[in-house]
Image 1 (cartoon, rainbow, N blue to C red):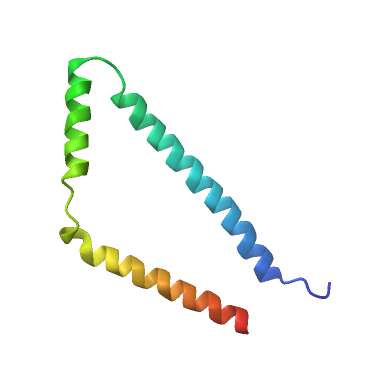
Image 2: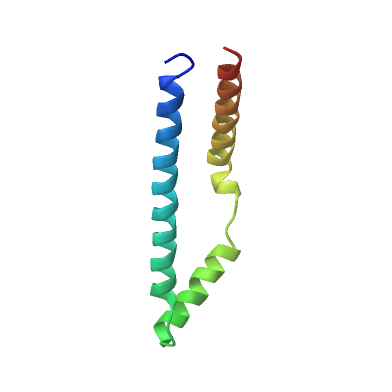
Amino acid sequence: MDGFDLFAFYRTTLFLFLGTYTLLLTISSVWQVVRLLAGPERHKEFLRTYVSYQLLTMRIRPVRGELLQIAALVALLGVVGYLHTLV
């Protein structure tokens, strides 16, 4: 088994399973919200208008710190991945 890296196999398998799970869960959740908001009833129309307004007027300032933290962690992950290729 020369050239077989167990960690690379584990990492790739884990990425495929978790990526697929996340994609399916996200699609399922979005589909449920679309089904919830669909329909000609007045209360659903009001809810669609409210959700649209909230999405359009969302402010970045209250979540700026969290977004910066996520960006820093993604950059750090990229650096660690790059350094892993050098070893």
